[in-house]
Length: 67
Image 1 (cartoon, rainbow, N blue to C red):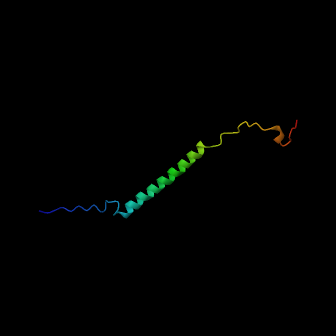
Image 2 (image 1 turned 30 degrees about the vertical axis):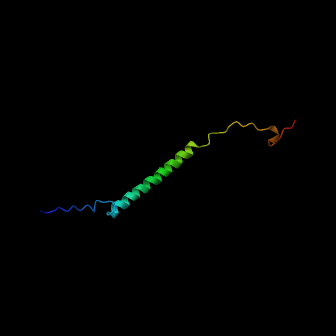
Image 3 (image 1 turned 90 degrees about the vertical axis):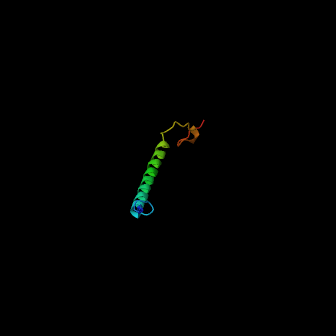
């Protein structure tokens, strides 16, 4: 009886250098893009929303008004 030997070394992630390096490259690209998009979204949600109406005392103006 003969036993069939199946060689899976070319399909294994650890044995195929080209396949594994391509996978790691795509993971790095995905992580960089996700970081950039996440940073842009965080800056967008914490953006400056405008000029609020602030009560400024009259004695602290450029030309102060005294009583």
